[in-house]
Length: 386
Ligand SMILES: NC(=O)c1ccc[n+]([C@@H]2O[C@H](COP(=O)([O-])OP(=O)(O)OC[C@H]3O[C@@H](n4cnc5c(N)ncnc54)[C@H](O)[C@@H]3O)[C@@H](O)[C@H]2O)c1
Ligand SMILES: [Zn+2]
Ligand SMILES: [Zn+2]
Image (cartoon, rainbow, N blue to C red; front, side, top):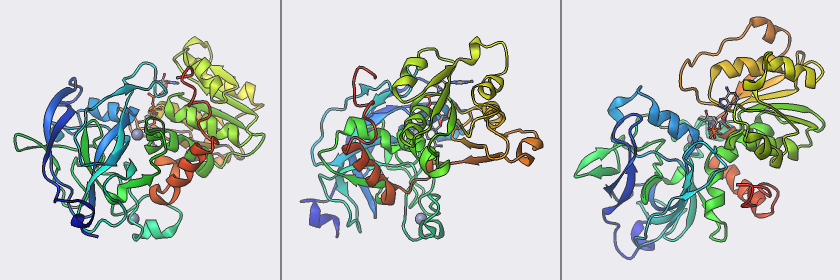
């Protein structure tokens, strides 16, 4: 369906407010930015709720791509397609990390580009940092979410034409993960968006756009945590707490949370953590404590910090014979993982995953349904826990 069928007039450039980073690690500045109309197969969304994911912070601080500034970060969000401009509001959401900035924004489809049939103006949507084209080798495989057409975008541009939809005074402003939700309006590829019911609370479900889904998927799809098993989770931010919730729902009997922030002990409990270790308070290696608590090593370990040294520790903390380590973190430095080969020869497995292995269009509606049915996020929905 062409845009004209759903919109009374063709979409025009919108000028709106956005939080712009002018250089690596530089404070975000609220600026007026121009947002171009959506191109073919793209939609423009009014961002209603967004969170700050640790990956936004890591990339913002990174000096590896200094040419990709000015840039608009943000990728964990929900919104709607509406014709009117309305005020932008960040609301604090502390599930992520008590120490970090954690605003939230929602998204609604504002206008649709040529060839878009799935979305109409007014639809509510989640945007996702990886898409699902439904036709590439990975999408048709049924066993991968690494879409070859709409995969993780690292060059600060849109997948389709390698240009930006944001500008200031006509000069390009780069995207992040082809989402850039720290803006009142953003253009995303329709293959990177998931339609959701307008009855869903956007300030909650926007976490399904990245961190919460990544953690739940790591526990369910990647590790396939079994009933009665032991689990150790390094890092109790959105990702780690969601792994804990996923493990609890699978019936894991011991869920050990490891975090350098003592405040995560209480938070962890609310998500199913049964034992808490603060490595900063130990005078022995953390893996030694985990082995003691689990009779030789956990069945599953998860790295949710973004530190490859912690990946090695996680591998050392799981059982020989069958122990599985899942790494989710995006490291700030030292990207190589090192491990003694004996850890692998003795039967441990190291795996990683993006977005918990979920295929956005195929799987995320099911997660939203689980939220609606209070299967997941029972606890997150209680404001006092946040
Ligand atoms: N693979 C994916 O799809 C995916 C999705 C979202 C986020 N991530 C990455 O996962 C990681 C976690 O993301 P988040 O948003 O939950 O981050 P977060 O910052 O909210 O949480 C990280 C937690 O780790 C703790 N921590 C820091 N150093 C530690 C250490 N040495 N030992 C134990 N705990 C430590 C912090 O106190 C914090 O509670 C980040 O690297 C992020 O970039 C990956
Ligand atoms: Zn993220
Ligand atoms: Zn694909």
